[in-house]
Length: 219
Image (tube, rainbow, N blue to C red; front, side, top):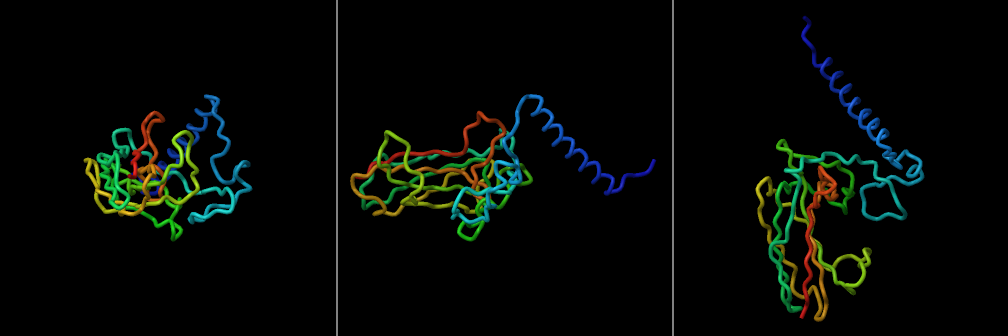
């Protein structure tokens, strides 16, 4: 019997991948699931300019970057703000402690340099998401309605320290004193990001994404 060459195995792998894609499409069609679009070439998106990796857009744009890797449920990133004050004085720093699990914090493509949404999600050899986490604090004008998403937050920081992994660890993030004014109500949020800043995908739809938020009164 002839031994298979690397070319044979390549053909087999490509064929198997094609069957997975086709099979997924057939299963989706059989279930009555018809996506509006799954590429920037499809009708609902074809008229949009392609996103270029920078954060400024003149109109809705379409990102051609594939989603990338989806981790297993037990390896999905998780995050928790473990310590935060209820109240601070305006002149004092605001200190947060953030714990992450299943997140290797070694990928951060600077958005200001065109790294926004240009990299598919990647994983380590152990199947863990490569990325970082963000912390942002904004002033809430009301607690009765959702806030305006457009303004730049009063504080923003990305943590890509080369650490993290399967076991949970804790990172301290300090917001400088004087960032906020007396009488303000501040919302501070933390969330995981992959190399291009997207919140990591999850194996199931009913898994909680890797994020947390707290509110702090400024006295």
